View (cartoon, one colour):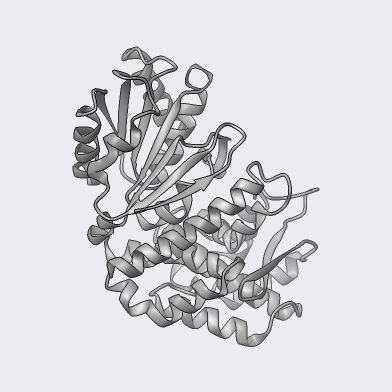
Length: 365
């Protein structure tokens, strides 16, 4: 079991990575909540067995456990579900010393964390990450939120978890499509900060896709360490460093929105977004064609789509969605673009014409 520290203005916390550690959730939570505290375990239907394992472990430590189930998919990240969860906390008499344990992927942690941030002006929550995407990215850093019709994560708060538990053993049951999609974020970490991780992915793609436990633990640990370092230094995205975690996301979020969050999942959109960002960087002379080739080859080898041909989306629709990006400054989009493997830079002033050309090159109408 590996422990990764994360600094936060609201209190330092730890990420715990290992295999078979769900059953140790009770011990890991001890000390975070008062003895006998109420704990609401929040999950979704497909992961109820993991929620029960966690609940049994923390019940044995004397906590009073109850359950709350969210709808499956992104529709759970809505105002309706946020208020439903808040009313459950209120009806069960939760106080400030009680807490939430979110068992699941990014949808569960985003909604649960946002509810925790606003209920009684803030209670503690723990993320038990059961997807690769959550283990390497969404469970870490304290970004919480819900979606609005206009776009993803447009309402939320910075509210760090009290603990993150990442059991790589649960990834054995992860569907192949979800595993592949999640690997886009791991590729991202290699591009933005760690050339060794990028090379490991190139050399071990087969083992990773076969769910080799040692390979999975390596990429989860390395990715979590990178994100922990970035968010510890720039928790509220005020210094510029945390912006690099957005590599591929400006294009990716626009693609998701234009596709109405159908036919494509988040990680797939981010993979395409990274392919677009790399091509844009090469066109304006920031990175080499060789970088574009290597990244594209790795994305394909990991089973990720690299074009939007099958989505039948319009470039104008994607651009409109991109202009609602939260990372805008002075009304201008900011792009994270690669210089080489392990190093990226932030660029503004990319014209709509250039963006439209990139989108069309990758299959948008």
